[in-house]
Amino acid sequence: MTTPRTATVHTWDQGMVTVPCPPWCLGTHEDGLDLVDLAHEGPETALTLVTHRGPVRLLDAALCQYPYSSNLDDRGVKLSVLLGLDGWHRLAPADVYALAETLTARAVELRALARQLAELQSGGTR
Image (cartoon, rainbow, N blue to C red; front, side, top):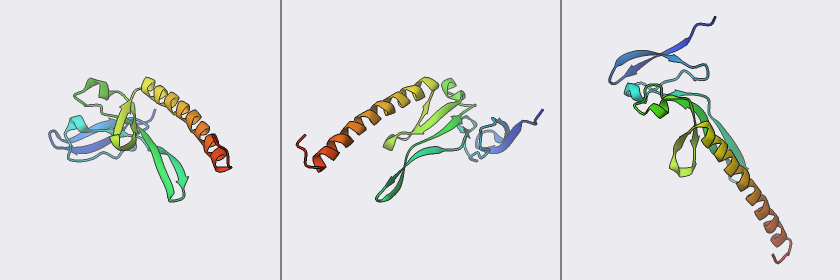
């Protein structure tokens, strides 16, 4: 049996608190927050597009959990996804599946636009 991982965090409202960390948590927690704002965060992943101006990261995502949140819905594990300028959104599994479906549909649209662009650039009239 493995020993559970823990982290000791200095909170604003509770002082020093030792909390259990889930296996996916990076183990780095921000000091100086209220306990309700303590978050477990997993490693970030992102879609990286190579552009003529260099690489661009899109759809950064990481597992997250706010186990002491005053919002009971946030206490479970979610996928935190960075969506444009709108910031990070914590998504449940159904929301992640819906996002994936939307991205799949968008990929189809982008392929159609790429075909249209290629035709126009080759002298087509479409």
